[in-house]
Length: 169
Length: 440
Image 1 (cartoon, rainbow over the protein chains, first blue to last red):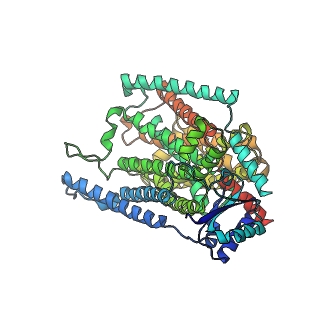
Image 2: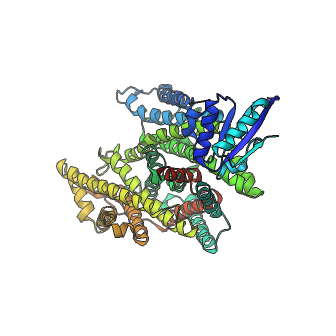
Image 3: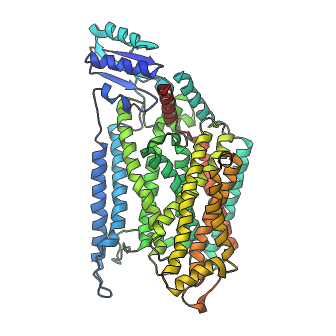
């Protein structure tokens, strides 16, 4: 990234922000980041990366919970396999309840942990390209481009309606 | 236009986290008093024994179990508003879901104490947990009481994760707009480096959706499992298939009433009238007509099943509850008035728009739902198969003080929450602003 230049544009208007992202997409830029105080899922088709594997992990976690809790019920019944009144120690119908709760428990825990992991959320210092106004009332785009593209990118951001465009140190 | 409105939302919500008023401190003091009184009562019960309660044979389950079921029920409306209405894309829940979710978590914490208090020998509570031990004894996973432990602890864990996840973007806003100090340090760690980057929103939104999808069946299952604590036993008035939906509807009914009880003073005292709109309160009142109707239907079906079963014990219990007991029958009719007739007043627009009536009616519904739990639990045990063992149960001072403790504990947690964390989901409120601009 040493020979790339970082440009940060700030927008007050959400439509202008989306328009600027559209311009970057049309210009086939690959290295840009969007910031905002509201859910940005809607701009997915304007961004280079899409989707999330969190739901796969949630499904995997849920399945693990189902199997684990069911096995727990069966295994613990067999450890003390006392037959009372002719009934077998294992009784699958009531085990549906712990297995069901286990599915939800491990599915949720897996989704939560992997969500934090993919979003790279952990106690940490804020990155230098971040502007605190992005969590308040402004939207932002940070673009990493060649020196030769710098002027064009700045012009595009201004044309789209950026209220502030500056170069990152 | 949008910037100005977004800034206003931040100012209103973060402004509510300021210095507490004298009234706030007075209520906190009252909570402290209730907590201390409850702790003293519990100490008496701990050292003297369960005999200080009104519990005896045949009424082994009384006020503590009533409180447990009632508090678990209170928790349900929070999940309904935050998860179920989220899946239905109901926009009016956007500004009140945080307050409702917090209520859920604190209500589960309060509820979770009651089985331990009721246990008597609380020091061996861990016997119900599945852990390897030298006796080769494990919990009986066929038992509804073990299901209950698993269901309630799962509910608490998942609700807490869901609550915290939703808080992260708002804590980041608070972090960026709070001056340096201990409060900002707390926000800094809790925000986990959130910057509102698209990458973060992308995974956040999917995770939030996954958790909402998972917590929705959970909320239905938890109160179903609680109802099976009763329905699985061969006790008249308990052993019925209607219990699971009946309990879930009742839980949501009481939870919605509690949301109103908390939101109405909160919006005034924290100056959040614009964010906690009257429209949202009105929608909750409309939902209560629906849940109140289910309650009315359930009461009718329960009585019908008692008669239609042709079981003499069932029939006599139905008659006993409604007419035959000077101790309990008035509670039965009060329950019907509070839970079914009072919410029907919300059919009148003027009444459901009156904050005073919403508050009064919600208090009546909550009281009615507590009475309902009591009427289900106690008279069924007090009037069992053997006339020779019939008895009358009434809560003793220790039980009343511990019940007061639960209110103090819940309210204290809630008061601390509204002064420490943003009680309105700011990012979702800002989405409303954007949606409004787009619609124009």
